[in-house]
Length: 206
Image 1 (cartoon, helix red, strand yellow):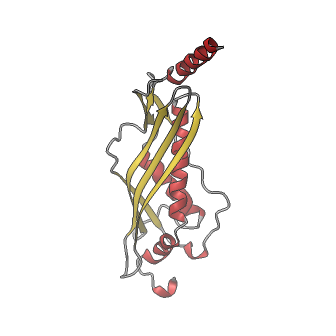
Image 2 (cartoon, rainbow, N blue to C red):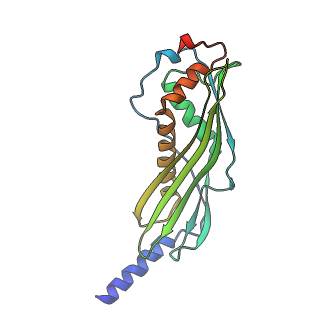
Image 3 (spheres, rainbow, N blue to C red):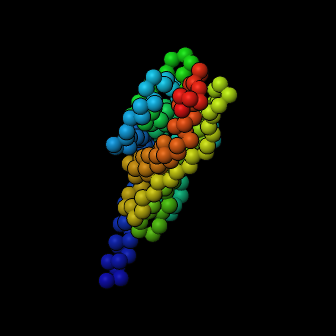
């Protein structure tokens, strides 16, 4: 019985660390929120989204670890991470009726991406994956009113894993990105700043 338990633990540890030496490339798949309502006031409001990448490590979005919890192979994003974040914001703007991408004179949504990283924690016979996505978003004031600034931070978590792979990292990064975008668009001050930020907008238009 004791021998079976030891053998089971060794096999589980081998499974956890078996792919840890192989680098992986993952595709982050943002899923827009279902049932988003169009805002009548957004019609004709052009918006341009830009993302500045301020992450300290742009070379990876995670690191595999072996059964001894030692960092090994990198996990990289197949697509440019700022482009992924930009597309997620643009998707939600379009769903609400904003014109994206906007032409000259469009409302500017400026993001500074601070973190987009997954991480593993390996235990004796299992592991967990976590991720964090953080950015500062600004909508510059126009015409003496409007304007918006907020730091958004969100996490993803997946526990009791049997494999430490790029796919597990992708899952928690997807979670964290969805939650970060949800927080942003759940803030009524953000929408108000978009509607107020268009050059020539008046308070009456709000």
